Length: 180
Image (cartoon, rainbow, N blue to C red; front, side):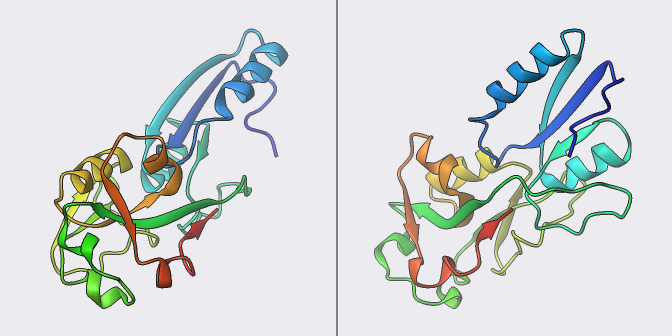
């Protein structure tokens, strides 16, 4: 699978901010060596917004979390997996509980990611009746860190950020929260 046409003079790469960027510099270095005249622009957005950026041709390539239905005219390939877990502030009431069922989480505010056009992804379904939304994982991380609620976050994002977050619900969350 190619990121772009070899004849292209520009690559606009839109990346979901929930995806680790550890390999991006190496990929860009290879592109720079193979295509020294290539102009590169990197954007970040939520996965549903990236699909819209590619559909509208604002972005030539998108790297997304594939919990979404892909439109027929967009090519898709799997680049790997990302683990998600449920996190709360260490000061949140849920942090002191042993969470064995999702119904325990529903009693508290959930922090959910969705697109700028208010489109939720299937990975980040609203499960609680009390919900706050944000359009990126960094805001969710900060809100959870300050005790505003619980949320699903990529493990690497939590590991790479200074925070007081506690992972909860290991008994049930590991079964369904791996994304491609």
